[in-house]
Figure 1 (cartoon, one colour):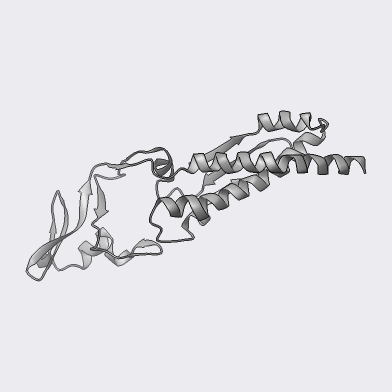
Figure 2 (figure 1 turned 30 degrees about the vertical axis):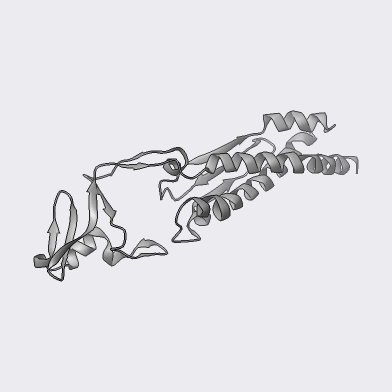
Length: 198
């Protein structure tokens, strides 16, 4: 997933403010970069935690990286460099398909999630390997483990999982970028013009 911002309308605005053709790229690049970092803070500190249940507060901060603008390339991007958690599907909705025959979906309440998700010893392969054969049932429906004379469902098998459009990454990115560009660009243009005069 990546989010991209087009600065063409702000380039026209910079020229309308009186910046020369040489000053415009520097002013725009500086403003785009500071706005992108503000947008990244919004996505990691507000958008994500207000939309989903967060188990690792630093996950999205580690996942999102800013590709900076420069005077030759007046665009910024925020990229998911980890490729985990199906961020694009959370942003736009869609279906997640497994790399193998099926997905093992943990049953709520049976497994404990930590900072890095389900503990390694409780993931499907490890759970199957560590559970005595007499207490284990692996069926087309899922993974069952015997406890107190009954079988408890720990993982459900699904061939696809529908992920709803539940995290407004793009909307919040564009809102923060537009607001910051509108407020900060005139300052950057003025600074560029003052520097040029000196």
